[in-house]
Amino acid sequence: MAQRILEPGEIETLAQRSIPRVRIPARTAVFARRAARLRHLGARAGIGDYLRFLAVLVDAQHATLQDLSVPVPTPAHIQGSTEHGMPPLQPAVWPRGDAWFETLRILGEALAAHADFPAAVAQTVSRIRRASRDWIEGQADALLQSGDEAVDAAAAPLVMASLQVHWAAYAASFAAEKVSPLDVPGVCPLCGTQPVASVVYAQPPYQGYRYLHCALCATEWHMVRVQCTRCGAVGKSIAYQSATLGANPENDGSAAQSAVRAETCEECHGYRKVLYQEKDPGVEPVADDLASLNLDLLLGERGYHRASGNPLLWQPDGN
Ligand SMILES: [Zn+2]
Ligand SMILES: [Zn+2]
Image 1: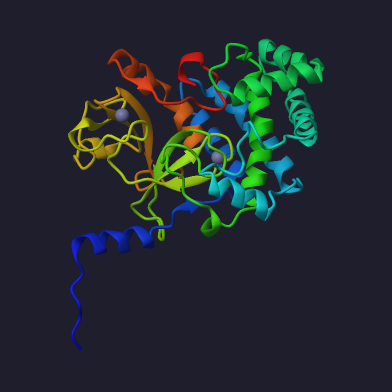
Image 2: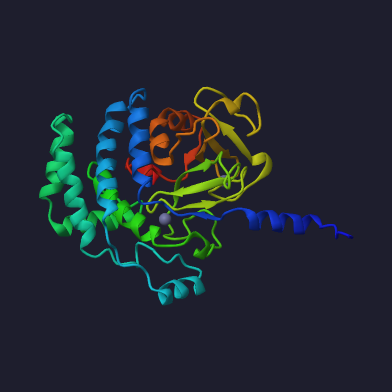
């Protein structure tokens, strides 16, 4: 039987279609994996105490998420968002309701139950637990409209953690194949938030593909490799740097030793990190990003700017 030979453009189209575009967070795994990774990395990272503190917080996120019931977007809302090219769970539009504040209270309780944190941490937790609802809502607004000077840096991880639980629950109500892609590849197709980092997976059906990880709802979406996630530049503008090695192309043997590398761009002088599951099966975007702050320091010295911040470490310039 005669076979029609595919033109190059058709081959690319078919390849794109076969790549799963979106990975929806699993309620049972998203925070459990993160907490385990924080503990693993906390044993050796320079900021181990902070990672172990966060592991307790993320444990509480996991526990809260398991039974959390949230109002899911209606088909009409989703369709309206799609027609306008907007993500359906935009934090500025999607109502937070009262439940997220109750989640914040539960997370604060879990932290307060740990007597072995440093005094400054215990004081911050106590301060947040006593804070007024208005102040907390103002902090949430400031965090979600990132870059706002009103953010209280010490309180930010706890407030953000509560928001993450709810947005992960909203995201988990979606089926991956029903999520519409946006025209802007650098933001989450469900909530419009910027990614914390990206992961190149090692297992089918995601093997060899790169996914950006949403800092708020933990949804992951596909983006081709060797392309700036900030400005879209490709080719020679893109290089990879690790904390122990210099600049290298992605397929360079020496750079490939590291599971965490920064993808730098000579067009916008921005960067985000890429985690390689093939090098370390346990990599997790939020945890590994925090544990590799030495790479951020190195890139700062070299004149590169972080494209967006880590949700559990508020830094005014990086968010
Ligand atoms: Zn998102
Ligand atoms: Zn760029």
